[in-house]
Each structure stands twice: as C-alpha cells, then as structure tokens.
Length: 377
Image 1 (cartoon, rainbow, N blue to C red):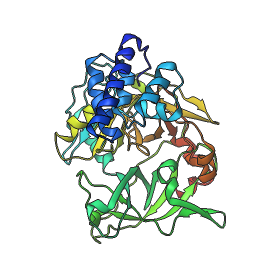
Image 2: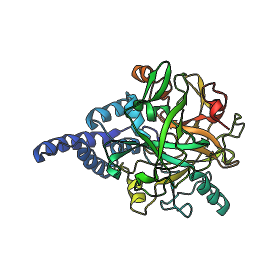
Image 3: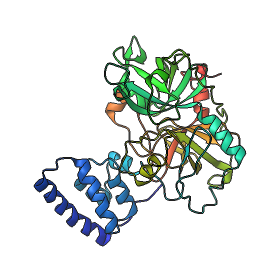
Image 4: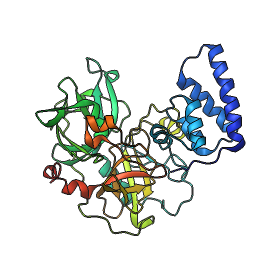
C-alpha cells in the first residue's frame, strides 16, 4: 500500500484551507464532519497533497485537523493508520465480479505482477466467488433492505460452515458457561448475491458461532449457516478448498500471485475509484489482484503480507492462490493495534497490522488450531 510522504508546502496550504473550511462550515451551518471531509478532500487534490494524506481524507475521517497533524508529525494513531489503507491502490486495481464473469472497469496501469487473466482463470475466480458472501445483521423489525446492515465478508469452508474475521462479529457475541456464542437478541445473515441490493428472502440465517480461537490476534471465527435461505429455495454454495501447508514460494513475484475476493462497503462514497465502480453496474463482489510477501511475525503468528487493494468491508475475504486456486489466507486488515477492550471482549478479535502492507492470517494456522480444525472437511 502507500507510504506516508513528507507534507511540505502542501501541508501548509492544507492547514490554511482547513481553517478556511472550518470557518465556512460554521458560517454555512454545516455540522456534518463527512461533508467537511469531502470538501477538504476535493480541495486537497487542487493543492497536490501527498497521496497518503489525501487518501486519508477520502476515508472515513474523525476530525481531520487532529488526524492530519498526527500523520504529518509521524504520530498517527492506530485508527489513523487503519483508515489510510482502506482505499484502492494506484498499482493494483480491483475487478468487479458479475453474474457472467470478471469485468475490468478501472484502468490497470502496466504492472508485470498483474498479467491479464486468461479465460480459464477468469472462469475459475468467478466459480470461487460463488462461495464468498457478505455478513449482515438485522437492525430493525421487518424484512426490507433498510433493516439490514453490512458487516463484512465470509466464505464457505465446509458444509454449512463459513469463515469470517473475529473482529467482524465481536459486537454480536457473548460468553456463557465458558463458550462464545451469538447474542440471543442479535440476528445475523449471510448473503451470496451478485447484486448490490440485498434481498432478505435470499439470505441464510447464522445459526451459531461454532469456533473461535482463544489466542489473541487469531482473527478467524467459524459460523454455522442454515442449509437453505429464508425463501426455502436457495441452497448454500460449495466450500472452498484451503491450503493446509505453509507456502514455500518466491515472495513478491508471480509465484505468489493472488486475488482477494470480497464485498466492499459501497457506502464509502469518499473513495473515487469505488464511486466509479458503483456507477458502472449492479455488482457486489470484487476480485483484487496482488502478490504475497514473506510471512511477517506479528503477535505470535506469521501473517502473509499482501498488496491487493482492500476496502472497508473486505475483512474476512479469502486470499486465493492463482497457482492452485486454494485459499491460502484470510484477509484480516491493515493497521490497527491490539487494545485492552478488544482482548476483554473476544481475544481473537484483536487485529495486528502493518502500515505499509495488508495482512492475511495463513490458512495453515486454521488447519492446526484446536478450536477450528474439527470444522474443516
């Protein structure tokens, strides 16, 4: 992903612009931080703001003045760092997955690590994408689309068993008699549709939380889904095969070429490339190309760094190895440190990250974890 750059004169211009924007916001009676961030992001492009700080302002900001100061001073908080990476890379462009195949919309710059997909590769990725869904929660009574909120990505690994991130579901679980489970007053659903619009009747109810590790930072949770959708017609898609052995590859080369398949948060309207994709058609999933780097020690594990573009919502996405088309990792996130509250709520919900690369938890850890391996084929 992108690095922080020295701000220089552009930062001075931004500070002046920010002060002007703040006064204008007060005068116009605009109380929305989001509106201020949008306007500031547009202005940032005019003053040639360094790309990483510009990207931050396109992300879901929380007080641009303090955050920009932190970024330029080199004291970015975990939340600041987390937001930096939730945008589309300039060198690895995601490709929407439609009902008929992969459809390139964004212009992919020449990149030897992103060769054109063959027809066979495109068909294989489309086939794998059928088993990748989005996790939803009911927010109000009724079955209208407005009563469901998007949480993140999941994928099938066994009959009725799906995998997502612990941090995606941490607000919806509690511990009783020493066991973690879905809170009785919460309803979760999985949707595997190609459409952006949610049709509740096509959703599969989450029946239970069947496994999560007690290890801090093991950001994987397994959930059991109903065998049929709420409409009683649709059946669950087949499971994806996972790699159970540590990879031995030439890192940062085509030998470790991957695609991350997931559901972006289409409401992230501050991301220009996502806005372009949203206007180009009715699709919901994306496949993001990238390569893997040498496993990175973090929190007692060796995570797989990758440079695929990920957007808010990609948490829980499978990382697909283009040599075997097996899942080699579960995309966890980017830059967020462990917090005591995370550990207290759910140990595995702690997210470890790195400012310059995205991280995925290798699937071979899942295949050997005492809490999870029993739910694999």
